[in-house]
Amino acid sequence: MGTQSELQATVQSLVRKGKGLLAADESGPTIAKRFKAIGVESTEDNRRAYRSLLLSSAGLGEHISGVILYAETLGQQADDGTPLPQLAAGQGIVPGIKVDAGKIALAHAPGDEITEGLDGLAKRLEPYKQQGARFAKWRAVYNVDGVRPSRLAVQANADALACYAAICQEQGIVPIVEPEVLIDGDHSLDRCAEVTENVLHEVFHALHRHAVALEHMLLKPSMVVPGKDHAQQAGPAEVAAWTIRVLRRTVPAAVPGIFFLSGGQTPAEATANLDAINRLGPQPWLLSFSYGRALQDPAMQAWKGQAAHARATQDALLKRARLNGAASQGKYEPAMEAAAR
Ligand code: 13P
Image (cartoon, rainbow, N blue to C red; front, top):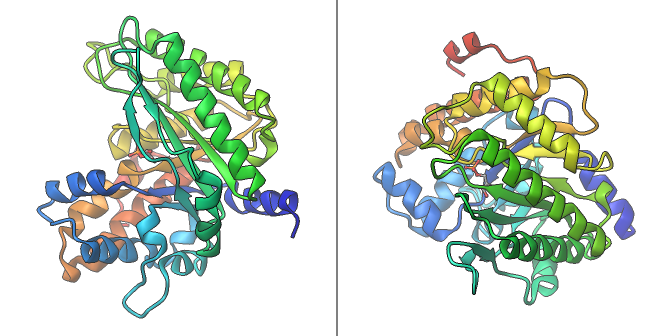
């Protein structure tokens, strides 16, 4: 298959009505933090056991079209020897891979950060592809206060995101471009909207400079929400109105899908907000979810490292996947939270 048709086929498998993505690509330190919270040691086998459990949930593919994995997981196997990417693919879930190498302080920009990982990226993609990855993810983060992110941080991260996306497309891997405006801090909804608009504007400018085909990429943005320490929090209707306004101003219609991150929202908030966004009516792009914590937190709480809790773990994941699938069509009702799975 030529690179263009390969990219097109992957986009078509990922962008599906009523489906979203599962972000299960926590890095070593992040998964250790999540496991610690439930009293589980982060050993390679515990990570394998947990992620195998998630991917073998029967029927997960009804609401999940793709899963973002960490490099270690691509090489791991379920108890019966099935490679984990194959376990996902067997459920109609396209495997993807986080390829950034995390963030560091941005030089000469106190309080700002830049994402690393471009060196050798094209070469790293080859084995990932052989292991079954068809798409990739790169996350840039923006800290918000009265003056941050600086112009330099907005430009430098946009450039890295665009460079990454171009390298992926050349290798036949669909890039997910993830600019995350952080929820941490006491900034207002207006301030988040202002920063998000600047960030997305710069990202699409850079993508154009790097000749990235917008039809063959996906966007993973944060929703427009007030900082979590801001006195006035916003309900779903307000979050939806601001988020859609900013996206309509900045994201070209050629982008096939926008898959939000949950970024520290509770599972129920992330679902209600996605639902409100989709109730605003037809938009040029599919609007769905690519949640990590908002899909996994209840499952992790149920699991607590116990093989005997397998069924409850999978039920908790399936429930969030189903509710978010409904929200991605504007068909979620809070009463649906009462169901067991
Ligand atoms: P959260 O939904 O937990 O923010 O994770 C999504 C993600 O992939 C962050 O990079």
